[in-house]
Length: 327
Image 1 (cartoon, rainbow, N blue to C red):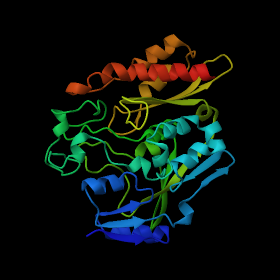
Image 2: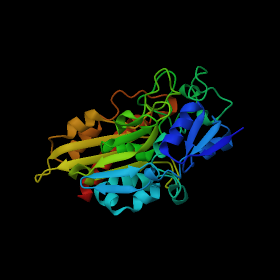
Image 3: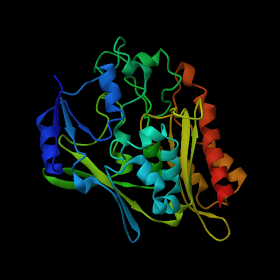
Image 4: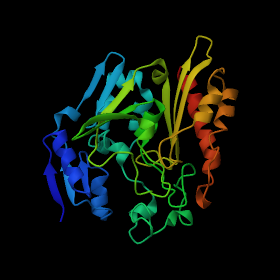
């Protein structure tokens, strides 16, 4: 039987999910409700946090912007500060799902949505994320959408969030709350690699809830862009995506670079080797192409997703070129 609790405070919600191993937080519910319909890992208890006021809103404090976990995707898209100072986030959210979903979904829940791997949603097939130890059907099955970076022998599911890729690119900080207090961690450390325990997707501890995020306004974040490659123009998951940001001096030399990719990895994936190849160089097509060519270093394809070895560098290179054209 599915039970429901409306939490009146963050502490109340944290205590509830810590006391119930299969409890889940619900706010927008756009991913959770779909899983309930499919009967995929249904929780025993839903903890509704929509009444927790401290999790709402977008707050600007000098060079710092705080996004509350209950901020709707559409709210962030429409915010003038976000549009000016973090275009990569606005573009990523605008490429997510549909207007109806964006009006409901929250920034706290979006990075925690479950994988879109076909076998995770298919309860007739083995899946280590859904049932640890049963096997990964995608390794030898239908894997066109699956990951070429960060996979393991137990899982090659691709992380689904566009927003998470953009947040990784701008060095966002995650603010986490629990009954014991508050802590922060870099957004790039929120998600775990599958390794031997693909069912453990994040580094959140039992009873911890995302309160929101902290973003630093900077020249690099202002010059940023998100490119999503997908099979159709609307309401589709990325086959490859790139969030890029560049800080240029007066001679168009790259003082700083951030490159994160999605649709190809088991978590939002920063490409440190591409960033290093860009920094100190002139922002020009040849430099972009040479750096982007490093994007697939260490990638391991599986059957139908081998095309991503070529698509990923092209996506990164195009994203960098489009960003430069916008300057």
